[in-house]
Length: 262
Ligand SMILES: Cc1cc2nc3c(=O)[nH]c(=O)nc-3n(C[C@H](O)[C@H](O)[C@H](O)COP(=O)(O)OP(=O)(O)OC[C@H]3O[C@@H](n4cnc5c(N)ncnc54)[C@H](O)[C@@H]3O)c2cc1C
Image 1 (cartoon, rainbow, N blue to C red):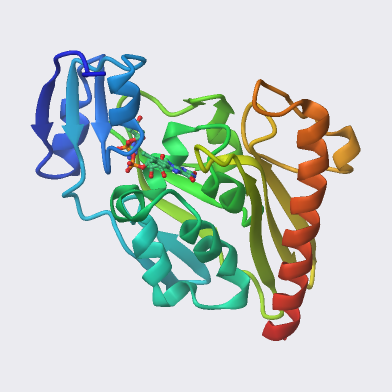
Image 2 (image 1 turned 90 degrees about the vertical axis):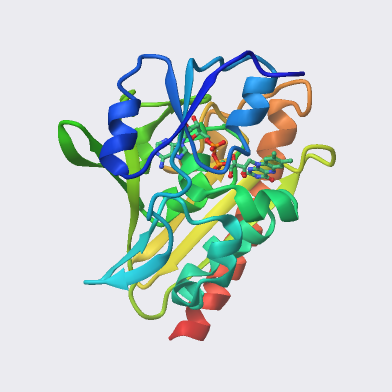
């Protein structure tokens, strides 16, 4: 389908982008890999599309014991990032490698993926397992928000209309840590029917799931007690069984990587 008519403006800098987003129905666009499809389906009909793709908000670096991922970093940028080449952060690269096709990985961004909040998207599970926070900027200033608090429902976040993700911050896991991501994908869409991200550190193990609930979520307690949903693609029972399989795979790989890192 063809999107409804809209206006387009390219933001010259962050302040300009925030100013443009003052229009109530304006929407930011980064790689367009999620916004354009929902505009084509006319699920989204922004009056103004604010292009933020040229802002300097990309790249991966580590400082003061924390990893900083710019929201405009593409999947390909994550795959290539030297700062992610360690067992503790392997889940990020492993997850990015499995997303979409070449075009999606060249254009789609990590920030766009989190804010699009697709309940079956892969990377939010990894960010949850790694305890990531979003650094947000609005005309009122900056604030930090845990990814878990940002994802409030299917395709819904707690971000304000005039709020942009300007950084994604992950506490660097200690030595002897490993992480991994495993999923079973729908054969047509490639999206996760069930995906699990695991982080194993000397202090404990964390698992986060995607594709099985209203939002990706960190597993608290036993999988048997988790609220798992079903739809026309897979029943709740089948998804629960898949979740157990991918959790096992992700945890096993993360434990092995933690040993490599010791
Ligand atoms: C063919 C295809 C296959 C795909 N396969 C997968 C897959 O296997 N797994 C998976 O997880 N995803 C998949 N995706 C989705 C895709 O990876 C992400 O949704 C995409 O990367 C989102 O990033 P973007 O830059 O394209 O976001 P955009 O489409 O530009 O924006 C998405 C949303 O985020 C908002 N936004 C963007 N950047 C910011 C920011 N910095 N601050 C605040 N709001 C922002 C926009 O306003 C919009 O609401 C696929 C997409 C396609 C088209």
